[in-house]
Image (cartoon, rainbow, N blue to C red; front, side, top):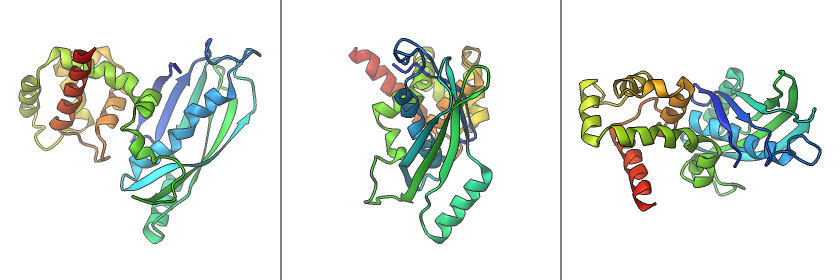
Length: 242
């Protein structure tokens, strides 16, 4: 229902841009975007980024404040960047204390580039199995339909549907072997596979980045043939049951 568009998703979620449209669902009686609509999308972004960069830990939103500086009178663009200095601080915290609670600053921008809404989001990064979590860890949310609807399935479903209809698993395995992907495939090789399948021109680079990041669940920078085939099989089973 949010009808978001992922404009940019790079470098393991360190750089994210998402368009949140102003439409009949998001427009309040005053003609601008509901604040709750903005908060719902902004909430998981920092935690999802942390879960990608620090895959051995549980990450969730601990607190968030939203400052509505201007009315959301146009489509809004959420812009998130993971500051390198903050990443280094988090790594030091995890090495010395085994936990970290960083705060991220990001925001929504109007079409003219003006800052519309500023977001301050504090993320709890804790050891796996930590019992004090107040919300589901972001890494676990990737397996839920809610998380997929929020960010990833929009592109994943589209690309995997093409994979499922264009090539069998045997075709993919042969193609993969021919390209030397037996030890896993990085983002460049994945793009080459899509190009070999005649599919690359159907998608933006950002869309391919999004699918690759979704398949790269352990954050290693490589995906296996099994991971691709599992998603293809899942897609086919879903279509067969409809």
